View 1 (cartoon, rainbow, N blue to C red):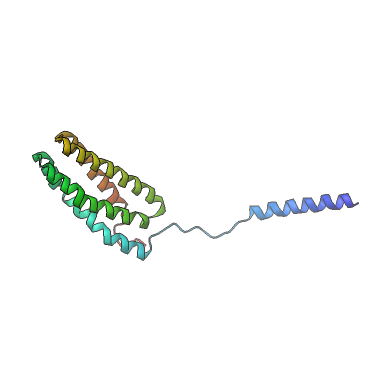
View 2 (cartoon, rainbow, N blue to C red):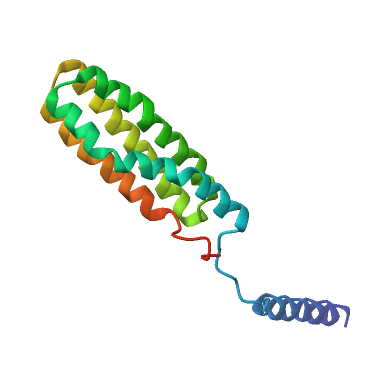
Length: 152
């Protein structure tokens, strides 16, 4: 008789465990959105990136003319500031976009290093191809930034 009681109690425990595991919270998961603090931080730093994007032709002209010192100054000045702004913006993006933003920033750094190396060697073609890739990275990053503060 004692044996039957223990078997029955084990079965009841298993059934209870099964029923509890099948039931779950009925609350719907809200998709992540931007907070007003995140949007504010993004809006503080995004104009710096856009300003560098607007000056893209200036870098292209410097490369084509072979003004390598000015190319280096542009890369280490405005482009470095844009990368820093990207670094500040990345943690304020939605979680699913943060890894993409980090990779874009890393790719941009690689292209800027190659432009700098091409400038040191006086290689216009290599500098121009990496110039295009660098500003393609900037464009990709700008697409990750929310358009307006009403997206919250």
